[in-house]
Image 1 (cartoon, rainbow, N blue to C red):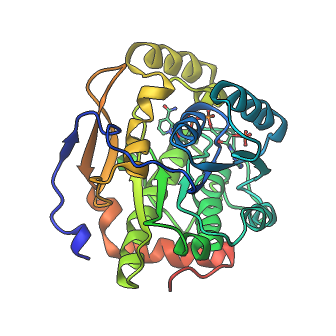
Image 2 (cartoon, rainbow, N blue to C red):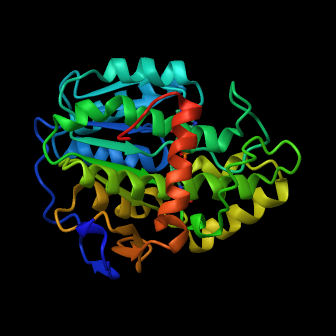
Length: 313
Ligand SMILES: NC(=O)c1ccc[n+]([C@@H]2O[C@H](COP(=O)([O-])OP(=O)(O)OC[C@H]3O[C@@H](n4cnc5c(N)ncnc54)[C@H](OP(=O)(O)O)[C@@H]3O)[C@@H](O)[C@H]2O)c1
């Protein structure tokens, strides 16, 4: 627990200045072919890593891969695409098999959907919770042995500052009676942060060298905001993103800090601060809702039950 005691707000200027060379290191980025995930993938490739992108839309992801190969003049195989649909447990298992057992140094749980119309997974769970949290929970479980073989391996869960407004009502995850797209998104992002903090606690308790971080991009100008069911929300959010949002590259600084910066601690929630084009990274202590052990234990056992996989318990 020592890494989680008394964390204090920390601002890192130029946080990627002394990031390690990643030659020979292997990374997985879910949703790594668009928005923030694409920026993460590019940054890892630039430093020499081998990257596996998980995506539903594999032909769009293959186009993104081909553009990266041309842009960075990469040898064949440095960046690959494998199909991953986080809402489908079979797809998550198959993706993990494709990643394989070889040492894995970094897992970036980036993929996500936001404020979409009501849909359910095979078990009747609301789709944002199922995709953003449950799919990543199961994927992490499948990939922990490979991460265990990695060098100072890290897992970075991409959440949102909106997690502080989330309510973890585990007794009704179908939302059939009262669905609010925005509330369901905040709940899924709260689950992301609780998961990241609890995973770090469990890894440390078992003496693992793998560490779990949580990060967020602030508001970023990505395709994520185009799916809101309400046209008014779409228009308003686009206007807000134009005024206060960042382009994906600067917005990704918190994620990359959590993934790569040797000084970053998992005890803080990493995001961008300051300049819109060249922000610093800010690590903030987690809100009580994310660090209390009772909701974390409840989320963990519910997630194990729903995804039929036991992780570090
Ligand atoms: N943009 C923001 O302002 C903002 C703010 C706070 C947090 N975030 C978080 O940042 C992360 C990245 O979002 P973004 O803004 O970069 O949006 P984005 O460009 O829409 O990227 C989302 C990615 O997730 C993938 N994805 C969606 N559903 C999936 C599924 N079922 N299985 C596998 N992959 C799936 C998508 O690829 P496919 O469609 O090919 O699967 C896409 O590559 C998300 O976790 C989001 O919650 C974003």
